[in-house]
Length: 108
Length: 122
Image (cartoon, rainbow over all chains, first blue to last red; front, side, top):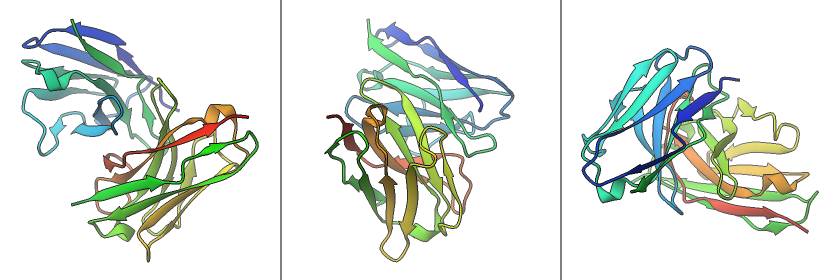
């Protein structure tokens, strides 16, 4: 199965910061990479599909980039509601699908 | 509005069985693949199983293959997960989620239900 490695695992940041989270695949997955946001006690929410397509209703401060094995989720001008855990997920030759281990974005 | 509501979570002894359900509404259920994903306490997300819109194709993670069975009743817009031979490491919140694309793309999933907690312990 394809493995996804996210970095960092934890990311302290402040409101107004620009942050980036990376996701590396163990083999090329083209653009079959999605990003989810999960807040404590809540279900994951799809933010970005196909590496860079912002889902409807997701603020434009979120963006995704990359293809092949290296992907990045960037959040500009962090807002208080953005502090959450973020997961990447690959669907190349799905199923199976796999998730990264998660990146917890904390208030500094 | 698309809604997914899981039910059936409970405390069960090791080796026991449990059935989960996911009631769907707000979309043509039979036209979308569905998945189960679980999250152990304090841990990340783990894909469990996928089923096509018709129910004719099913897929399982190696960790549950032979023990769990995914199914769907399209007449009742209900997704199910029958879990047998439960182990302590099956303890998790179980989420159902809808394929974003019409048909069986199996690529991206949204929305997700609120989840139901399964605890396997003696």
